[in-house]
Image 1: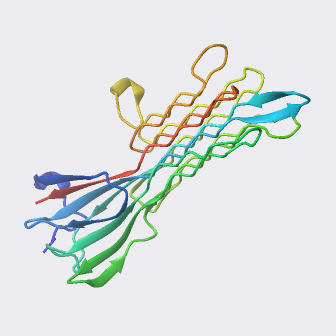
Image 2: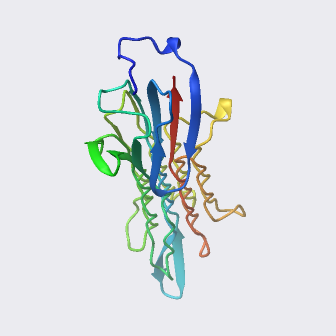
Length: 253
């Protein structure tokens, strides 16, 4: 049985195993023998960048870039051996997918899809639910707005940052960047909550599509949780997908 009290220092125990869960959707984890406590880290999926849009005027069409997708959140929670948590019990997660790209058509703009939430859903023993953890969540980033497809001067908005709830550590992602109509560029994808360019940490937001001879498509966000870049204003520009979420479980004993 997991038997460490919350007051017990974590330095008294050794790392038994580290499990990385990168497949999206419903996933499970079995608590290994000898475990005294668990550290669970969760990353939400990044939102996708928005497609370019256009405003038709006579025989020509003026195109506008899409917003960048928002970065996924990060949650860390430690479970210190509640009396009902035992070896060989199963923890069930939902790992959020990266936001999907939605293409525009002609002058129609397509908003990027939102990244999925990563959640710790249930704790089971012999298929019987013991406790639910659905309130612990690393939220996915919002999708970037599609470029203008009607009159007006508003830049397409970047996707909202993913929101973290009820962990011991809760860190929101970064919002996606707005498109720049004046510069004919899309918005950059927001970084995931734990991204650090200096250390090479994964989860960076994708670059925006650029005009003036540059790449018109956004660049996909990196996993876990980077937002996808928005498309530039060229008539062939596409937004890019967000990076998928992830779960890391560390068992100590």
